[in-house]
Length: 325
Ligand SMILES: NC(=O)c1ccc[n+]([C@@H]2O[C@H](COP(=O)([O-])OP(=O)(O)OC[C@H]3O[C@@H](n4cnc5c(N)ncnc54)[C@H](OP(=O)(O)O)[C@@H]3O)[C@@H](O)[C@H]2O)c1
Image: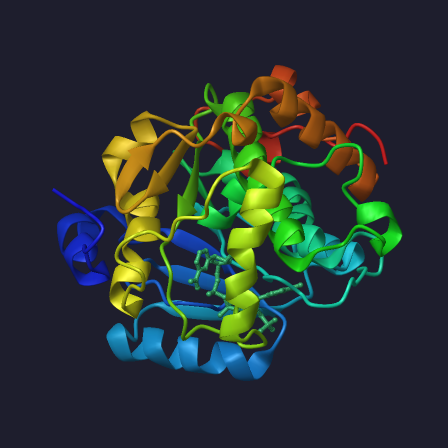
């Protein structure tokens, strides 16, 4: 029914009754998501970039409440302060791509790993009581076909203090981390009624993601792929999607019954696919979970065993799950 040319309007038309009245948290104000939830919280760094998103949402349906939460998600203390109420859908779209200079966040973590994965790991786990309190909540994370560039470098994730840094490798590592984390979360929560889905949207060159890059920079991808994986880089078709098409797969992840039944699952071109082994293998999934806990200096395991939500799903009945700090 849906394919690589599916538009957001087609997805919304099919599933719009499923989103009415729900609360959606969107981390990163990149390409827009269209539907009619009760409340959309947009968490991002820059107010001026969120304003057009809020105006667009109001133009579509002025009954939707939009709240802007200003947060730099690579700052762990700011993330801790931003974590709040009952959430039906948590969408992690925020990301950074091929940052040219080796850059560290305020915790000393390579910036792309931090902006794409670590912030998602920390914020999602902090928001877990709110997700567990909702009825069948969904976690939707964003990766990219760039994950094919490399497995996660468990022995050198910080690129030897920059000595081994390559912008596209760091992007590939971060995007592999997005998938590993989503699989780790989905496995932990599949008996708790929470769906965990990871989306590759397809390409659109008009977002801010690659605004700092030239066509020569994109030309480097093939060499990185050959050197690191020993195969050619292949761009997908369609090479570029419209804004409407690029949001379609994430909308299917937010709304579609089929992907939810396969959680944890990877979606591309509107369909569920199996990602490459390096992005879903159990050993890597668990190793990344452990490393991520070390990097945020907090463990998030106990809800796996002991979490209980009462029949009303009341948030005050969800026991705290922070084991140590
Ligand atoms: N566009 C594509 O072709 C494409 C293809 C495949 C996958 N993706 C993935 O799709 C996702 C969205 O990409 P996009 O094209 O919409 O990118 P975008 O236009 O650059 O939007 C990214 C959003 O993330 C926010 N953000 C980045 N770092 C942040 C931080 N540290 N704290 C808080 N917010 C932060 C940005 O806010 P600021 O502007 O304030 O930094 C911006 O609102 C990314 O995960 C990307 O990897 C995109």
